[in-house]
Length: 275
Ligand SMILES: [Zn+2]
Image 1 (spheres, rainbow, N blue to C red):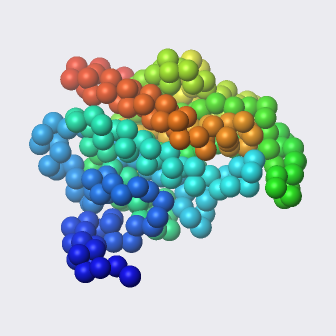
Image 2 (tube, protein in one colour; image 1 turned 120 degrees about the vertical axis):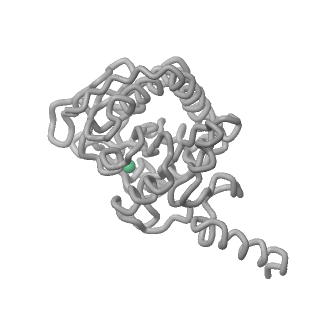
């Protein structure tokens, strides 16, 4: 049974942050990352760079099923909190997680939360799947599961309908280049000319695709990038996604890229390429 100080603490948190009152157990105790609806006003005044981390999907709508029948959402959640902790090490970066209390929200509601937070940059964290024709079956712990070991690697997406499409593209390429430098490899499978894929590769080296109608990317007012961290239908890559050291390495690469974004921001040279 919680003691009185804890109850008072929870009440206080509820009063100061609309995101804190109902947070579940998925994240570490990092109240600094649970900024509420207006973190950017103060942070912009100090010249900080606010990064919103969107956790793809939700508990009841968990996204892709992994090769071991785990929901993508659980991986997204772990990676988002790993990234939050990593970005907090950078004094100039103010990271926050969108919907940390794990509410079931629509994509439109998600966009409202993002735009209300007013970040300088949005990164939406996901884990990838493949088209059904590439799936095989195996038995994992006595249960049938679908997997695909043919593809692996990360993918980055941007929307050219985003209000800051040129910056979104530049940011995605910067992240992709840093991921390459850090030893990660992009997957080209979204460019394949088959049903459900056929995405335009904007930068094959960096692994950046164009996906204009992804709602979160299209309707966020800040530069926005979606990162598929890896393919959890791949049995080996799923094990990596479960590995805290691997997630930490990925987060450090993203932090390094965000640092370069901030420095480039001092001499902005975005390519405005809305179409
Ligand atoms: Zn997803």
